[in-house]
Amino acid sequence: MNHTIIIAEAGVNHNGNIELAKKLIDAASVAGADYVKFQTFIAEKNISLHAPKAAYQVENTHKAESQLEMVRKLELSEQDHWELQEYCKQKNIGFLSTPFDFHSVELVKKMGVTIGKIPSGEIVNLPYLREMAAAFPDLVVSTGMATLEEVATTLKILIDGGADSKRITILHCNTEYPTPMQDVNLTAMVTMKEALGVNVGYSDHTLGIEIPIAAVALGATVIEKHFTLDKKMEGPDHQASLDPAELTAMVSAIRNIEKAMGDGIKKPSPSESKNINIVRKSIVAGRPIRKGEVFSMENLGIKRPGTGLSPMMWDIVVGQTASRDYDKDEIIAI
Image 1 (cartoon, rainbow, N blue to C red):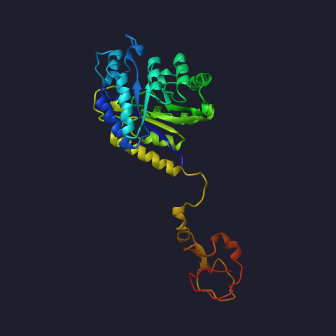
Image 2 (image 1 turned 30 degrees about the horizontal axis):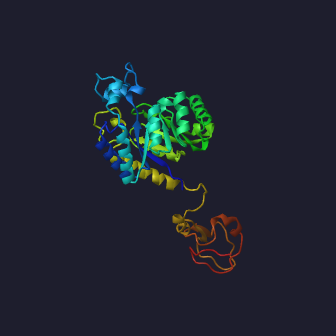
Image 3 (image 1 turned 90 degrees about the vertical axis):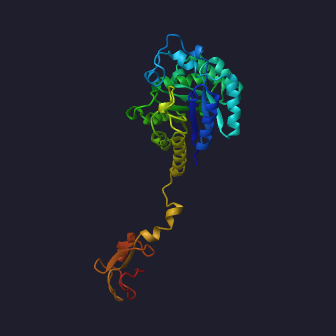
């Protein structure tokens, strides 16, 4: 049975508070996620004074502040990172963090993290991609806002930079919070798998849990989903995130889907095999039949249980002569 890697995306939903970040780790661990993921960045190295906020950020944060001011409040210190990684170990859940700049790449690498997460906004950042390819043996790449051609170019840059294509997972993604259902385009994930020949997954920003579950059924090997402790908290991503109960439900549903996918061989399952003879039918006497009488449409019937001759032998039985007497509903033998 395949095991889908589930990344509970805490992101910046800690609001810059390490105690809140630890509570997010608690929730992700209880939910059964494989990893909890944060974001590593130095605001000034990523956002200019003139960068506007996205519409969803304006809606969910202080209207007057700039994007730089908003993001600066969401930074975690280097010490915070080490403390959160240690806390993840205590809670038996993997620690990941998305680095957004060269300094952050070095920090996450120094922490011994082996999976590098490339966010959607950076897949057209050539120097950054080369740095990530050199820093991490495994790469997970979100592709929101990208065309297939851009994703193919990103993949080539990573491979040229030393990354092993077999250790790269491309995540289909839509970078709108929340993503409208009509914009999900989930089958694009399948398109990327077929066109690029790499593992694929899905980073979800829709409301609810049904789309990640569907993605697993379509072959996603990694699922990433934002979560929060309270959707009403102030911050850019809370409203488009799952609450802890929803995160738990999503993980449980994905694990059930993994079991349900099976091996692809069409055959009776162990649980249903006992019902074969109960539900299928046999050829029986439709009325009392005397020895020497010819079996025909008029004196035969097809009824449960399926412990006798299969109705698929009907043409063989019809026309033969009864070797003994039969009572009504008695299973025919030849």
